[in-house]
Image (cartoon, rainbow, N blue to C red; front, top):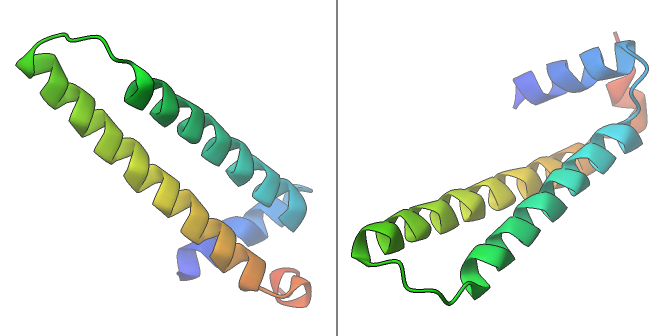
Length: 86
Protein backbone atom coordinates (compact mmCIF):
# COMPACT_ATOMS: atom_id res chain seq x y z
CA UNK A 1 0.00 0.00 0.00
CA UNK A 2 2.89 2.35 -0.71
CA UNK A 3 0.72 4.31 -3.13
CA UNK A 4 -1.69 5.14 -0.30
CA UNK A 5 1.15 6.54 1.77
CA UNK A 6 2.31 8.56 -1.24
CA UNK A 7 -1.17 10.00 -1.78
CA UNK A 8 -1.51 10.76 1.91
CA UNK A 9 1.86 12.54 1.92
CA UNK A 10 0.87 14.57 -1.15
CA UNK A 11 -2.39 15.44 0.60
CA UNK A 12 -0.40 16.65 3.60
CA UNK A 13 1.82 18.72 1.32
CA UNK A 14 -1.32 20.45 0.13
CA UNK A 15 -2.36 21.16 3.74
CA UNK A 16 -4.78 18.26 4.11
CA UNK A 17 -4.40 16.54 7.44
CA UNK A 18 -4.87 12.90 8.27
CA UNK A 19 -8.17 13.88 9.87
CA UNK A 20 -9.34 15.64 6.71
CA UNK A 21 -8.50 12.62 4.57
CA UNK A 22 -10.38 10.38 7.01
CA UNK A 23 -13.31 12.80 7.05
CA UNK A 24 -13.49 12.58 3.26
CA UNK A 25 -13.46 8.78 3.40
CA UNK A 26 -16.17 8.77 6.09
CA UNK A 27 -18.28 10.98 3.83
CA UNK A 28 -17.84 8.54 0.94
CA UNK A 29 -18.83 5.68 3.23
CA UNK A 30 -21.96 7.54 4.32
CA UNK A 31 -22.96 8.36 0.73
CA UNK A 32 -22.46 4.76 -0.39
CA UNK A 33 -24.33 3.36 2.63
CA UNK A 34 -27.29 5.68 1.94
CA UNK A 35 -27.36 4.74 -1.73
CA UNK A 36 -27.10 1.03 -0.92
CA UNK A 37 -29.92 1.33 1.61
CA UNK A 38 -32.16 3.11 -0.92
CA UNK A 39 -31.55 0.46 -3.56
CA UNK A 40 -32.11 -2.43 -1.15
CA UNK A 41 -35.33 -1.02 0.30
CA UNK A 42 -36.86 -0.16 -3.09
CA UNK A 43 -39.54 -2.81 -3.44
CA UNK A 44 -40.66 -2.00 -6.96
CA UNK A 45 -40.54 -4.80 -9.53
CA UNK A 46 -38.83 -3.72 -12.74
CA UNK A 47 -38.42 -7.16 -14.25
CA UNK A 48 -35.52 -9.59 -14.46
CA UNK A 49 -33.20 -7.40 -16.56
CA UNK A 50 -33.31 -4.49 -14.15
CA UNK A 51 -33.18 -6.83 -11.15
CA UNK A 52 -29.85 -8.10 -12.48
CA UNK A 53 -28.65 -4.51 -12.83
CA UNK A 54 -29.84 -3.78 -9.27
CA UNK A 55 -27.87 -6.75 -7.92
CA UNK A 56 -24.77 -5.60 -9.83
CA UNK A 57 -25.12 -2.13 -8.32
CA UNK A 58 -25.50 -3.63 -4.84
CA UNK A 59 -22.32 -5.68 -5.31
CA UNK A 60 -20.45 -2.61 -6.59
CA UNK A 61 -21.55 -0.47 -3.65
CA UNK A 62 -20.66 -3.24 -1.21
CA UNK A 63 -17.19 -3.48 -2.78
CA UNK A 64 -16.67 0.28 -2.49
CA UNK A 65 -17.79 0.27 1.14
CA UNK A 66 -15.30 -2.47 1.98
CA UNK A 67 -12.59 -0.60 0.08
CA UNK A 68 -13.22 2.72 1.85
CA UNK A 69 -13.38 1.03 5.24
CA UNK A 70 -10.09 -0.76 4.61
CA UNK A 71 -8.51 2.57 3.64
CA UNK A 72 -9.80 4.11 6.87
CA UNK A 73 -8.33 1.24 8.88
CA UNK A 74 -5.01 1.46 7.06
CA UNK A 75 -4.73 5.25 7.40
CA UNK A 76 -5.66 5.05 11.08
CA UNK A 77 -2.80 2.59 11.57
CA UNK A 78 -0.21 5.05 10.22
CA UNK A 79 1.32 7.12 13.02
CA UNK A 80 1.16 10.90 12.48
CA UNK A 81 4.95 11.21 12.64
CA UNK A 82 5.34 8.72 9.77
CA UNK A 83 2.94 10.68 7.57
CA UNK A 84 4.99 13.87 7.85
CA UNK A 85 8.38 12.24 7.25
CA UNK A 86 9.98 13.22 3.98
